[in-house]
Image (cartoon, one colour):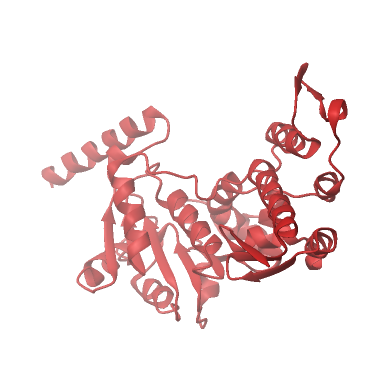
Length: 341
Protein backbone atom coordinates (compact mmCIF):
# COMPACT_ATOMS: atom_id res chain seq x y z
CA UNK A 1 0.00 0.00 0.00
CA UNK A 2 1.38 3.39 -1.03
CA UNK A 3 0.22 6.93 -0.48
CA UNK A 4 1.07 10.45 -1.65
CA UNK A 5 0.00 14.00 -0.82
CA UNK A 6 -0.58 16.90 -3.22
CA UNK A 7 -0.72 20.30 -1.49
CA UNK A 8 -3.05 22.83 -3.13
CA UNK A 9 -2.65 26.60 -2.89
CA UNK A 10 -6.27 27.38 -2.01
CA UNK A 11 -9.73 25.78 -1.83
CA UNK A 12 -10.79 27.24 -5.20
CA UNK A 13 -8.13 25.04 -6.79
CA UNK A 14 -9.75 21.92 -5.33
CA UNK A 15 -13.14 22.92 -6.73
CA UNK A 16 -11.62 23.56 -10.16
CA UNK A 17 -9.72 20.26 -10.14
CA UNK A 18 -12.57 18.04 -8.95
CA UNK A 19 -15.20 19.60 -11.22
CA UNK A 20 -18.92 20.12 -10.85
CA UNK A 21 -20.24 17.85 -8.08
CA UNK A 22 -16.81 16.11 -8.00
CA UNK A 23 -17.33 14.64 -11.47
CA UNK A 24 -13.61 14.83 -12.31
CA UNK A 25 -12.70 13.23 -8.98
CA UNK A 26 -14.97 10.25 -9.62
CA UNK A 27 -13.49 9.78 -13.09
CA UNK A 28 -9.98 10.00 -11.65
CA UNK A 29 -10.64 7.34 -9.01
CA UNK A 30 -12.44 5.08 -11.49
CA UNK A 31 -9.64 5.13 -14.06
CA UNK A 32 -6.63 4.97 -11.73
CA UNK A 33 -8.14 2.77 -9.03
CA UNK A 34 -6.67 5.01 -6.35
CA UNK A 35 -8.52 6.50 -3.41
CA UNK A 36 -8.50 10.31 -3.18
CA UNK A 37 -9.44 12.28 -0.06
CA UNK A 38 -9.37 16.07 0.43
CA UNK A 39 -8.31 17.32 3.88
CA UNK A 40 -8.09 21.11 4.05
CA UNK A 41 -5.77 22.07 1.21
CA UNK A 42 -4.17 18.61 0.98
CA UNK A 43 -5.19 15.91 -1.51
CA UNK A 44 -4.25 12.48 -0.15
CA UNK A 45 -3.89 9.67 -2.68
CA UNK A 46 -3.67 6.01 -1.60
CA UNK A 47 -3.51 2.63 -3.36
CA UNK A 48 -0.80 0.45 -4.83
CA UNK A 49 2.32 2.15 -6.17
CA UNK A 50 1.21 2.25 -9.82
CA UNK A 51 -2.26 3.56 -8.92
CA UNK A 52 -0.80 6.33 -6.73
CA UNK A 53 1.79 7.27 -9.37
CA UNK A 54 -0.82 7.42 -12.14
CA UNK A 55 -3.32 9.40 -10.04
CA UNK A 56 -0.71 11.87 -8.75
CA UNK A 57 0.63 12.39 -12.26
CA UNK A 58 -2.86 13.24 -13.54
CA UNK A 59 -3.52 15.62 -10.63
CA UNK A 60 -0.27 17.48 -11.27
CA UNK A 61 -1.04 17.63 -14.99
CA UNK A 62 -4.44 19.17 -14.24
CA UNK A 63 -2.79 21.65 -11.87
CA UNK A 64 -0.39 22.73 -14.63
CA UNK A 65 -3.35 23.36 -16.93
CA UNK A 66 -5.02 25.44 -14.21
CA UNK A 67 -1.81 27.39 -13.65
CA UNK A 68 -1.53 28.27 -17.34
CA UNK A 69 -5.16 28.92 -18.22
CA UNK A 70 -7.10 29.37 -14.94
CA UNK A 71 -9.60 26.71 -16.05
CA UNK A 72 -9.82 22.94 -16.38
CA UNK A 73 -12.33 22.15 -19.12
CA UNK A 74 -13.98 18.79 -19.87
CA UNK A 75 -11.80 18.63 -22.99
CA UNK A 76 -8.66 18.92 -20.85
CA UNK A 77 -9.86 16.07 -18.66
CA UNK A 78 -10.72 13.82 -21.63
CA UNK A 79 -7.35 14.43 -23.30
CA UNK A 80 -5.41 13.76 -20.11
CA UNK A 81 -7.30 10.53 -19.43
CA UNK A 82 -6.80 9.17 -22.94
CA UNK A 83 -4.26 6.33 -23.30
CA UNK A 84 -0.81 7.76 -24.03
CA UNK A 85 0.36 6.98 -27.60
CA UNK A 86 3.70 5.30 -28.25
CA UNK A 87 6.45 5.48 -30.85
CA UNK A 88 5.98 7.81 -33.76
CA UNK A 89 2.40 8.58 -32.68
CA UNK A 90 3.83 10.42 -29.68
CA UNK A 91 5.59 12.93 -31.94
CA UNK A 92 3.46 16.05 -32.25
CA UNK A 93 3.95 19.14 -34.41
CA UNK A 94 3.88 22.37 -32.43
CA UNK A 95 4.69 25.61 -34.25
CA UNK A 96 6.50 23.59 -36.91
CA UNK A 97 8.78 21.71 -34.50
CA UNK A 98 8.81 18.07 -33.40
CA UNK A 99 8.64 17.22 -29.72
CA UNK A 100 7.82 14.45 -27.32
CA UNK A 101 5.06 16.27 -25.41
CA UNK A 102 1.60 14.81 -24.97
CA UNK A 103 -1.55 16.56 -26.19
CA UNK A 104 -2.44 17.48 -22.61
CA UNK A 105 0.95 19.18 -22.16
CA UNK A 106 0.62 21.32 -25.30
CA UNK A 107 -3.07 22.10 -24.97
CA UNK A 108 -2.91 24.27 -21.85
CA UNK A 109 -0.22 26.76 -22.99
CA UNK A 110 -1.88 27.13 -26.40
CA UNK A 111 -5.22 27.90 -24.80
CA UNK A 112 -3.56 30.22 -22.29
CA UNK A 113 -2.15 32.28 -25.16
CA UNK A 114 -5.57 32.42 -26.79
CA UNK A 115 -7.21 33.44 -23.51
CA UNK A 116 -4.67 36.23 -22.97
CA UNK A 117 -5.55 37.58 -26.40
CA UNK A 118 -9.28 37.46 -25.73
CA UNK A 119 -9.06 38.63 -22.12
CA UNK A 120 -10.46 35.34 -20.76
CA UNK A 121 -8.86 33.43 -17.91
CA UNK A 122 -7.32 36.49 -16.24
CA UNK A 123 -6.35 36.01 -12.59
CA UNK A 124 -3.81 38.37 -11.02
CA UNK A 125 -4.66 37.62 -7.40
CA UNK A 126 -1.41 37.13 -5.50
CA UNK A 127 0.63 38.75 -8.27
CA UNK A 128 0.09 42.38 -7.24
CA UNK A 129 3.26 43.87 -5.77
CA UNK A 130 4.04 47.17 -4.04
CA UNK A 131 5.94 49.59 -6.26
CA UNK A 132 7.04 52.08 -3.60
CA UNK A 133 8.26 51.96 -0.02
CA UNK A 134 5.03 53.54 1.17
CA UNK A 135 2.97 50.90 -0.58
CA UNK A 136 5.08 48.17 1.04
CA UNK A 137 4.34 49.64 4.47
CA UNK A 138 0.64 49.82 3.54
CA UNK A 139 0.39 46.19 2.39
CA UNK A 140 2.30 44.96 5.43
CA UNK A 141 -0.02 46.93 7.72
CA UNK A 142 -3.05 45.25 6.11
CA UNK A 143 -1.52 41.82 6.66
CA UNK A 144 -0.73 42.46 10.33
CA UNK A 145 -3.64 44.60 11.56
CA UNK A 146 -7.40 44.13 11.75
CA UNK A 147 -8.11 47.80 11.06
CA UNK A 148 -6.07 50.03 8.74
CA UNK A 149 -6.79 53.67 7.93
CA UNK A 150 -4.90 55.01 4.93
CA UNK A 151 -4.72 58.64 3.79
CA UNK A 152 -3.03 59.33 0.48
CA UNK A 153 -3.25 61.28 -2.78
CA UNK A 154 -4.93 60.17 -5.99
CA UNK A 155 -2.99 57.47 -7.83
CA UNK A 156 -1.08 56.14 -4.81
CA UNK A 157 -2.78 52.73 -4.98
CA UNK A 158 -4.89 52.98 -1.82
CA UNK A 159 -8.03 51.33 -3.20
CA UNK A 160 -6.33 49.04 -5.70
CA UNK A 161 -3.96 47.47 -3.18
CA UNK A 162 -6.75 47.13 -0.61
CA UNK A 163 -8.84 45.17 -3.14
CA UNK A 164 -5.82 43.00 -4.01
CA UNK A 165 -5.25 42.19 -0.34
CA UNK A 166 -8.94 41.42 0.17
CA UNK A 167 -8.95 38.96 -2.74
CA UNK A 168 -5.75 37.40 -1.41
CA UNK A 169 -7.36 36.91 2.01
CA UNK A 170 -10.43 35.39 0.35
CA UNK A 171 -8.33 32.93 -1.64
CA UNK A 172 -6.40 31.95 1.49
CA UNK A 173 -9.77 31.35 3.23
CA UNK A 174 -8.92 33.90 5.92
CA UNK A 175 -12.33 35.46 5.21
CA UNK A 176 -15.41 34.19 3.38
CA UNK A 177 -16.75 37.47 2.03
CA UNK A 178 -15.60 40.84 0.71
CA UNK A 179 -17.71 43.98 1.15
CA UNK A 180 -16.71 47.10 -0.77
CA UNK A 181 -18.27 50.34 0.45
CA UNK A 182 -18.35 53.94 -0.71
CA UNK A 183 -20.22 57.03 0.48
CA UNK A 184 -22.53 58.45 -2.19
CA UNK A 185 -21.27 62.01 -1.97
CA UNK A 186 -21.37 64.09 -5.14
CA UNK A 187 -18.63 66.35 -6.42
CA UNK A 188 -20.97 68.91 -7.96
CA UNK A 189 -23.56 66.57 -9.51
CA UNK A 190 -26.65 65.38 -7.64
CA UNK A 191 -27.83 61.76 -7.45
CA UNK A 192 -31.37 62.82 -8.29
CA UNK A 193 -30.33 63.88 -11.77
CA UNK A 194 -28.90 60.47 -12.62
CA UNK A 195 -31.29 58.05 -14.40
CA UNK A 196 -32.29 54.59 -13.24
CA UNK A 197 -33.02 52.83 -9.97
CA UNK A 198 -30.96 53.14 -6.80
CA UNK A 199 -28.23 50.75 -7.99
CA UNK A 200 -27.90 52.68 -11.26
CA UNK A 201 -27.68 55.93 -9.30
CA UNK A 202 -24.88 54.74 -7.00
CA UNK A 203 -23.02 52.78 -9.68
CA UNK A 204 -20.82 55.76 -10.70
CA UNK A 205 -19.61 56.07 -7.10
CA UNK A 206 -18.88 52.34 -6.74
CA UNK A 207 -17.40 51.87 -10.20
CA UNK A 208 -13.71 52.43 -9.24
CA UNK A 209 -13.84 49.48 -6.84
CA UNK A 210 -15.41 47.26 -9.49
CA UNK A 211 -12.77 48.37 -11.99
CA UNK A 212 -10.05 47.24 -9.58
CA UNK A 213 -11.65 43.80 -9.24
CA UNK A 214 -12.10 43.46 -12.99
CA UNK A 215 -8.42 44.23 -13.46
CA UNK A 216 -7.47 41.26 -11.28
CA UNK A 217 -10.15 38.68 -12.16
CA UNK A 218 -11.89 37.78 -15.39
CA UNK A 219 -15.51 38.77 -15.94
CA UNK A 220 -16.90 35.30 -15.28
CA UNK A 221 -15.13 35.03 -11.92
CA UNK A 222 -16.42 38.46 -10.89
CA UNK A 223 -19.95 37.57 -11.99
CA UNK A 224 -19.84 34.30 -10.06
CA UNK A 225 -18.49 35.92 -6.89
CA UNK A 226 -21.12 38.65 -6.98
CA UNK A 227 -23.96 36.25 -7.83
CA UNK A 228 -23.01 34.09 -4.85
CA UNK A 229 -22.71 37.16 -2.59
CA UNK A 230 -19.01 36.45 -2.00
CA UNK A 231 -18.26 39.99 -3.20
CA UNK A 232 -20.76 42.70 -2.30
CA UNK A 233 -20.53 46.31 -3.44
CA UNK A 234 -22.76 48.60 -1.44
CA UNK A 235 -23.23 52.31 -0.68
CA UNK A 236 -22.34 53.34 2.86
CA UNK A 237 -25.94 54.15 3.82
CA UNK A 238 -26.92 50.48 3.34
CA UNK A 239 -24.45 49.31 6.01
CA UNK A 240 -26.48 50.51 8.98
CA UNK A 241 -27.71 47.75 11.28
CA UNK A 242 -25.43 45.01 9.89
CA UNK A 243 -22.81 42.92 11.70
CA UNK A 244 -20.38 41.17 9.37
CA UNK A 245 -18.36 38.16 10.51
CA UNK A 246 -15.49 36.58 8.53
CA UNK A 247 -15.56 39.57 6.19
CA UNK A 248 -12.95 41.82 4.61
CA UNK A 249 -14.51 45.30 4.43
CA UNK A 250 -13.10 48.21 2.43
CA UNK A 251 -14.42 51.74 2.84
CA UNK A 252 -13.22 53.85 -0.08
CA UNK A 253 -13.33 57.66 -0.40
CA UNK A 254 -13.63 57.82 3.38
CA UNK A 255 -12.73 61.52 3.43
CA UNK A 256 -16.35 62.07 2.37
CA UNK A 257 -17.84 60.36 5.42
CA UNK A 258 -19.03 62.28 8.44
CA UNK A 259 -17.84 61.39 11.93
CA UNK A 260 -21.15 59.65 12.62
CA UNK A 261 -20.96 57.64 9.39
CA UNK A 262 -17.42 56.55 10.12
CA UNK A 263 -18.39 55.34 13.59
CA UNK A 264 -21.37 53.50 12.11
CA UNK A 265 -19.18 51.74 9.53
CA UNK A 266 -16.35 50.76 11.87
CA UNK A 267 -18.78 49.24 14.35
CA UNK A 268 -20.06 46.81 11.67
CA UNK A 269 -16.94 44.69 12.34
CA UNK A 270 -17.82 41.20 13.52
CA UNK A 271 -15.76 38.18 14.55
CA UNK A 272 -12.75 37.39 12.35
CA UNK A 273 -13.35 40.48 10.22
CA UNK A 274 -10.91 43.04 8.88
CA UNK A 275 -11.40 46.62 7.72
CA UNK A 276 -9.37 48.88 5.45
CA UNK A 277 -10.42 52.53 5.23
CA UNK A 278 -8.97 54.64 2.41
CA UNK A 279 -9.30 58.27 1.46
CA UNK A 280 -7.63 61.50 0.40
CA UNK A 281 -7.92 64.32 2.92
CA UNK A 282 -7.16 66.87 0.18
CA UNK A 283 -10.32 65.95 -1.78
CA UNK A 284 -13.13 66.41 0.73
CA UNK A 285 -16.53 67.02 -0.91
CA UNK A 286 -18.53 67.44 2.29
CA UNK A 287 -20.43 70.63 2.95
CA UNK A 288 -18.39 73.42 4.47
CA UNK A 289 -18.01 73.05 8.22
CA UNK A 290 -18.69 69.29 8.28
CA UNK A 291 -15.78 67.33 9.76
CA UNK A 292 -14.32 64.48 7.72
CA UNK A 293 -14.76 61.04 9.27
CA UNK A 294 -11.39 59.96 7.90
CA UNK A 295 -9.43 62.73 9.59
CA UNK A 296 -11.43 62.35 12.80
CA UNK A 297 -10.93 58.58 12.79
CA UNK A 298 -7.18 58.88 12.30
CA UNK A 299 -6.99 61.27 15.24
CA UNK A 300 -9.17 59.18 17.56
CA UNK A 301 -7.96 55.66 16.78
CA UNK A 302 -4.21 56.01 16.27
CA UNK A 303 -3.38 54.90 19.85
CA UNK A 304 -5.53 51.72 19.83
CA UNK A 305 -3.67 48.38 19.57
CA UNK A 306 -4.58 46.51 16.39
CA UNK A 307 -5.17 49.74 14.44
CA UNK A 308 -2.64 50.93 11.86
CA UNK A 309 -2.50 54.44 10.38
CA UNK A 310 -0.72 54.71 7.01
CA UNK A 311 0.08 57.99 5.26
CA UNK A 312 0.96 57.75 1.56
CA UNK A 313 2.53 60.71 -0.24
CA UNK A 314 3.12 61.99 -3.73
CA UNK A 315 6.16 59.69 -3.92
CA UNK A 316 3.75 56.72 -3.89
CA UNK A 317 1.77 57.83 -6.96
CA UNK A 318 2.05 55.18 -9.67
CA UNK A 319 -0.26 56.60 -12.34
CA UNK A 320 0.91 58.73 -15.27
CA UNK A 321 4.01 60.76 -14.37
CA UNK A 322 2.00 63.99 -14.71
CA UNK A 323 -0.34 62.95 -11.88
CA UNK A 324 2.48 63.30 -9.37
CA UNK A 325 3.33 66.77 -10.71
CA UNK A 326 -0.35 67.79 -10.64
CA UNK A 327 -0.76 66.68 -7.03
CA UNK A 328 2.44 68.48 -6.02
CA UNK A 329 1.28 71.68 -7.71
CA UNK A 330 -2.03 71.67 -5.87
CA UNK A 331 -0.38 70.82 -2.54
CA UNK A 332 2.07 73.71 -2.96
CA UNK A 333 -0.80 76.07 -3.72
CA UNK A 334 -2.70 74.90 -0.62
CA UNK A 335 0.36 75.39 1.60
CA UNK A 336 0.92 78.87 0.19
CA UNK A 337 -2.70 79.89 0.78
CA UNK A 338 -2.56 78.56 4.33
CA UNK A 339 0.54 80.55 5.15
CA UNK A 340 -1.09 83.75 3.89
CA UNK A 341 -4.13 83.24 6.10
